[in-house]
Amino acid sequence: MTAALQSLLTTRLKEPAPDAVIAMADRVRSMHEGVRAVIAYGSALRDAALTETLIDLYVLTETFAGVSTNPLSRLGCRLVPPNVYYTEHTADGQTYRAKYAVLPLSQLEAKTRSTVSNPYFWARFTQPMRLIWIADKITEAKVLNTIARACETACTNAVGTSPGASFLAQWANLFRETYRTELRPESANRASAIVEADRGYYEGLSAVLAHLKPIQPNWSLRHATGKLLSVLRLIKASFTFQGGADYIAWKIKRHSGVDIEVTDFQRRHPLIAGLLLLPQLLRKGAVR
Image (cartoon, rainbow, N blue to C red; front, side, top):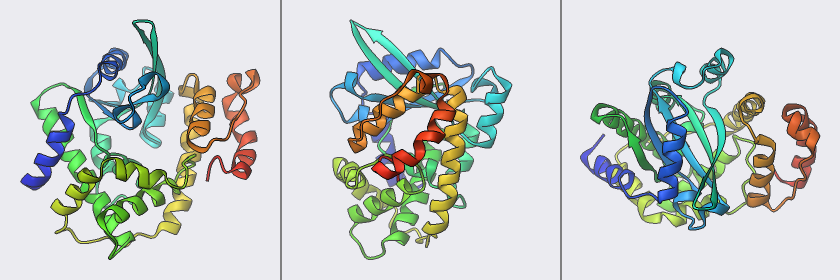
């Protein structure tokens, strides 16, 4: 990691976060053992109305024991990371909602390397983030190195995906391709909007990483394998993600405008309901 990249990332990681995000981070940290770091990212750092959006967090633990007390859940995280949970927190009469991912820091380190073709982790960790809580300086250095590695991997893929394009177009095209590796309900201009919201940050990343050799990705293969992983994550989440059916319906409507009515049966049997609803969601364009 160059000094320029370290400076860029450290400045962003240590920017202040909204009080509601900090309170939510404290809540989820208390729900798991051996937490080493809590990181915030996503729309909660850009949108002012935190009661109308989800607070996205990553909770990084020392070992798999901190992910869950359930052995099957821990196994699920080993095989198809991360484990994703939903929680709510009420303060001053306002309800805040969070979706947070949990996995060991060492597992995240492995998933952000340039040899990993699936972009699930390294693309997410190129977003501007806030380091809400950290256990110690050693862990802070590990987290910073992991995020730097994710940015390096993503940038080489971005340049290789759109050689000759502008920096902003390269990042937007990269995110657009990564969405296609998942069952994501994103609108056509979502990738460009994310990059435009932090254009200085992404231009800075491209500038400090310009010395890296581009990677020529096989996106067709990544789309196929990524969607398979997404299905496996959905199946796993149906057993761990409380309130998952309502969250998914809210997410789909927010990003695609498609209104999905959640029934009591779907709440009780989210896995079965999800499999039955998938063809309908694909027809409506709610997922791609």
